[in-house]
Length: 107
Image (cartoon, rainbow, N blue to C red; front, side, top):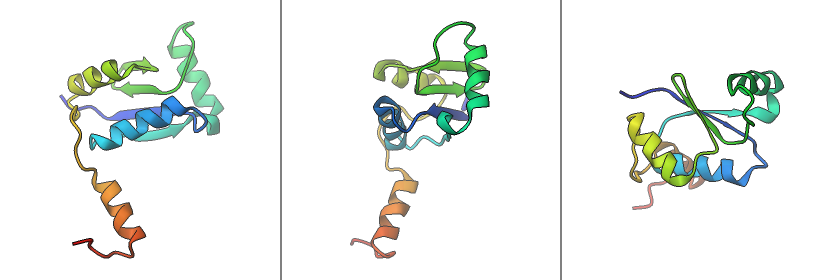
């Protein structure tokens, strides 16, 4: 069953940015939430963790919340959530590249 995925991140966290890149590379659709810009949301997530430390990235799908998953854990989560576990072209990246080229097709 495919679930809506949210990625809670901090722009200064290299692991967060690596996870975002990994997800984009697999064509996963997700909502990206900068925790540095929303302290109230950070507090709500910390409460949800019931005493465990909130680290970034944190991934949420449905009622599942995973904090700083390893690459192997991330692959398993994608599969369990019905998201692509294998690399796939991402339309948003293609669109951005085409825009940088002025809309020209490279062929």
